[in-house]
Length: 352
Image 1 (cartoon, one colour):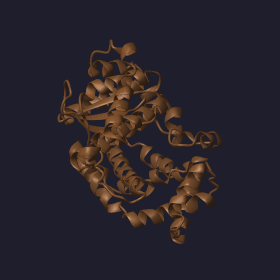
Image 2: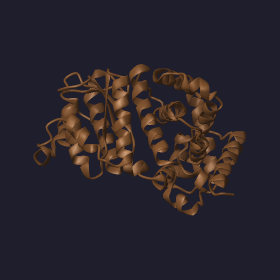
Image 3: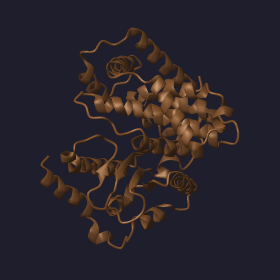
Image 4: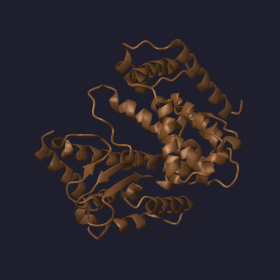
């Protein structure tokens, strides 16, 4: 896309709602207004306050989307100021505006669909606050207003309706919401302290990095659960089961089952003695330990597609994924393991 055209379109996205929302005088006012008095929203607010104190070089701010999406996009523009920089992706300076346009479009999509996400920007010309800004899109009540919402959030709606999930395997709302917040915050911390996704011309480079990033994010979120909970909880085993259902959701990039198993093998006492920044470093080490290289990822994806077919997943996403790896041979052993683990999680969640 031509830079001049990108700038115009980007301004259109950001300013189209100025007339109806001009009364919003600052991004901080917008963030405070979003913190309604539901238990889920209050937990989200407290978690963000904690992270803003812990990492003063980053400003963590959340937008909830839905009916407020238009106002959120205006507030985002006010927050980032003139010529912000995406810190999530390595890029040449000449493509900076293009990347901001894509990043803004992604945030808009996440807000409209009320899907959790995280984006890190450098705002050299921001009006106030830290120059590094982590933009989250978490609708706390959509994610975890209650146990039912929390439990179904990681499952396909049709699958959730079919399952008879035992009460002991359902996700408690506050535990799951904390997990989602910590997961998304990790993505910003990774971009800030480890670095952006490197440039590559590999076809599946984005998917590969998403897969790796979610391994680290889930490891961090579960480690934070162990650190912050005062009593023994069924949450670690339950979240592993939920993530183990990712192939049933036609979502192999969120299959973090093996990485989460590495976390629960650790001694809880050791985790609770660490501070939050050490937790981040530990999560990154676990991610590196379980990481696979790009070629291994392609074979994993081919194997996951074969496994999805065997467990009866018929989705458009599977066909689209197949086209990307149709020349890669699936690993028979890996396919069997993926099928076995998926069915095991399904049986447990179905009370069998």
